[in-house]
Image (tube, rainbow, N blue to C red; front, side):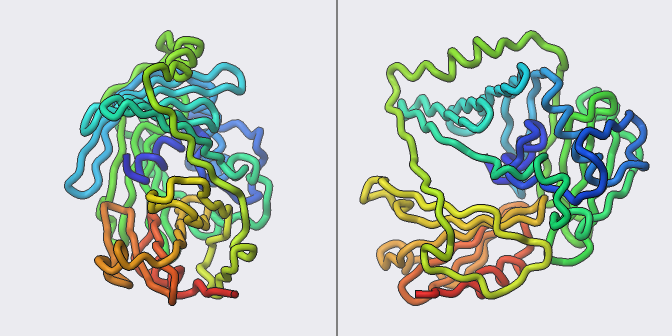
Length: 341
């Protein structure tokens, strides 16, 4: 699943890694259907978040990124504060992913492997809606575009317009009655569609049992269970400094993967996450490995849809920047990273 698909599911689930917002509006504000044009971005985003928490649904969604197309089946249920989803990949290798709040369990039946991990939201959305240093309202404008039908449902359409060339724009379709996101596009500077995720079929109010999903999620009999361990840290503690400044992007989290197999290339890799509230950039820092990295070209850029990757060798270190941002934004990140010790 692409990073864009994860971002889309974050909208659907209402717990995306990067949803943060400015202080305009109150978290409890209610927005009535048909009033998108009157809502500041903060209240509009809150409606999307609350919609995911209040609705049970089953649907099929399709993600397109460049020449790649993938589809999955989603079951979503929310019981109070407990949210659960099951996602079955319908294309590519067989894969079933369960999520219970921040706990994510992925079943890979062909390998008889289960990957169990915690994907924390870093407390961004909706807890930062009252923070005055959030960036979305400063770096994106909200432009209503009317209504369209998606998967048979009447939907409100809005465009999130970036104020500069450091980030992409977005076009979002939300179910008119509930506010659930039903379609999302990432747009380049010429309004071209870089990536798209959309429900092709969607039913609300289906009888999805949280208990049944939990039983399936917890049944790992016959599978080898792998639990990657991430240790919270800071870049400063690991000897790194970020000397540059990318307007709107703030450091959100820093984790180090440890206790992995010595043969695992991801062992002891540092991940430093930045976000402007919508887009995110991850800096992966690892020791330079001639056997692996010599085959790569420093400062080589790779793109798949809206996701770009840029690499750089810095003395004995190998840096990889990945994000849903233009190449020039990643270039600032990789060039601004310095070793402090």
